[in-house]
Length: 436
View 1 (cartoon, rainbow, N blue to C red):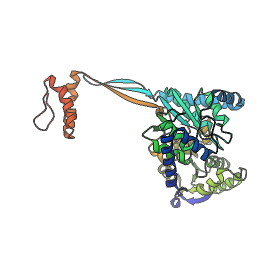
View 2 (view 1 turned 45 degrees about the vertical axis):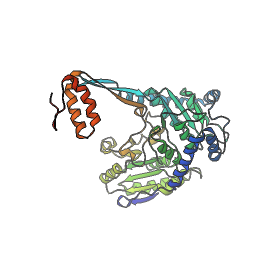
View 3 (view 1 turned 90 degrees about the vertical axis):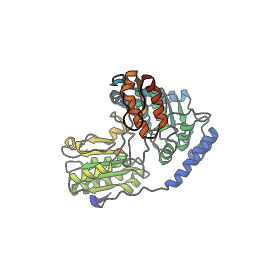
View 4 (view 1 turned 120 degrees about the vertical axis):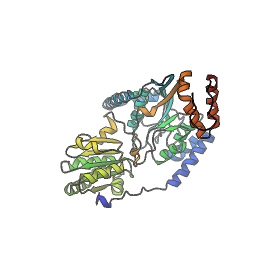
């Protein structure tokens, strides 16, 4: 890892031809929209090098995966799901139906309604992220979503990874498809002979999956457009270099484009962590994405003091933020933009990825400035209601009519006139508020 003074740090531009990726995604979406299952088979053969006998996974295969799941892993999944459920239920308490008397004869209300049907994308391949299925499905269930369809790319044998199927079985999810990539997103959005379209798509994926989600947004909802994963660790001399190095590498192994940053005012800690990262890298497999990630985006940022370090981090708005500093709990109040915040040396980011009850589907690339991570809110529709009596119309109707007139929306004004005239109201001859 390079050590760079804060004032000289510039984020490295991400590699890759996004325009070519966008063209590929548009081609895939158009083909699936026009040709359904035939296009899905074509792209499965092209990108996954396999075409499953049928895209939908049979119920007995899901049951067999759950039955064959090692007991300790099954218990870990249960604990993680229970903690996610507890956290989601507490979040759900923030969203309630209500009715409010706005004025005499004017009653406005809110109804909290779950989305009817969602699609959950679960990455497969070398890293079958079954934990992402828990992160999406548990809060969705707490929110009241009735239907969930799970999509995960098939392996070389044409099957969805067993841990993903086991997690689906554990959660009682019976609609699982051996289908990945942008073609899975297109199927979720537009449907096909084998797939019924969904109302919203959630879950992480590679650049093609995320570009596809952006492309179909509007036809369906999406959770958030996620980029490469990232972690920022703020640490001082009280921190352990070996733990910091381990946490940086844990994040780096997600993706060659993952971003791992240490920000510190301590030159000694910077040097110690740099050596630790080199040492721990030797223990990772040669094929680990962490090697490219650390070489490309791994940086130790040396700050003059904690104050500029905090300002730098707030501006960056990282997906994951760890505080390994003295008085971490007090300093936590000074951070204003992050996906998830991990306070103190025991709060490993990896706990947020799995078993703490936090959701690991989080905003990246600075999106934490305006967005938060996946929660029950993503599976709810906050719909509003209005009931107005004659007395209420007398109170708020003239103001609405005058505002419509000022916006030159004469049909709006006329719709109010039709209601006001029977009660003896007449619009003014010119300007001003309608008098009662």
